[in-house]
Length: 192
Image 1 (cartoon, helix red, strand yellow):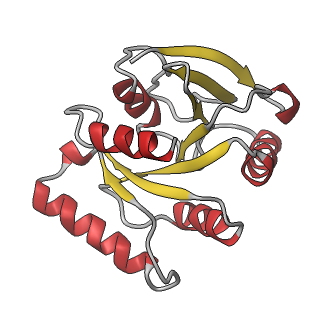
Image 2 (cartoon, rainbow, N blue to C red):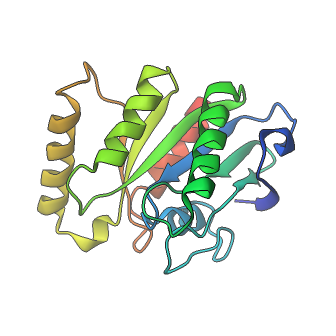
């Protein structure tokens, strides 16, 4: 797989103006987004990983095999940034999701170890209400036994079904042992 950094944008006007299909990755700060992106692209340092939340502070575009853009979006949640900066990010993200015609789907990353978090559920609700296609990608599955992971996924599905008629595609991944990598890439290939 050939993966190359294209550009970072902090305003919608700076986004690439190509018609190339885009697949966006987003999640709470420290969900393991950069690690998953590096695993998917088989690149060690394509997306910058960090022990401190909020490392990604712009919309980062990467071109994959000259065919599609992988879009690394700033995390939401507990990043140590000012209210003003957080408000700017939220405004930029909303505009991106509601106006970006190249966006094929969004992968919402969720730490499989946690109970359903309000900001994850709110964000999923925002996407659903606005008709933005998305999938749920559970990360860090290597931190649980297979049975524990299955229980967490089922708990999450139950939680979602209280307000959703049908569930989006769901993937269980681990950047550490590459679980889910092939399934995610096949899904993207199918959508292209």
